[in-house]
Amino acid sequence: MLPFKYTGTNRDLAALAEGLTDDMVTNMSKFSYLRVVARSSTAQYAQRTVDVRAAAKELGARYVMEGGIRQGGAKVRIAVQLVDAASGAGLWAETYDRSFTPDTVL
Image 1: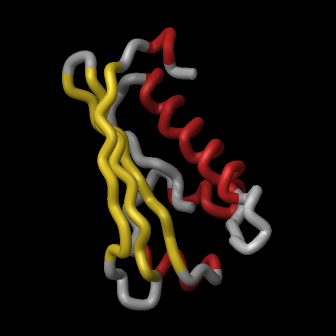
Image 2: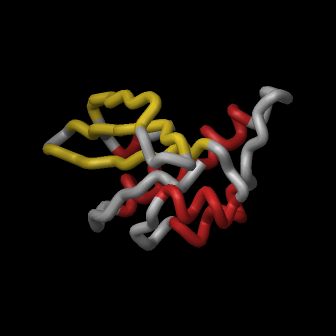
Image 3: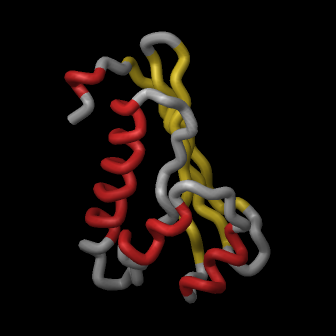
């Protein structure tokens, strides 16, 4: 799981991106049949653009999940995708649009 990306200046959305990454890693780790790379091992990719195939090779991962957050007015869009590390092909993707107010992040 690569860190969720947020490139704006809104500190609440940056915190949301970090929280989503942490929650996804924690929840996926509950499945014993999934090998999930620790958040501390992927943190280096948080502030830079990275080729998913190169990151997967460095991490020893077969699949990579990545995501991003964008804001438009009072709404946020969270986009997530699962990528095959060998080919770089997307296997699954979903977009979630939600209302956003900083005091309701959790």
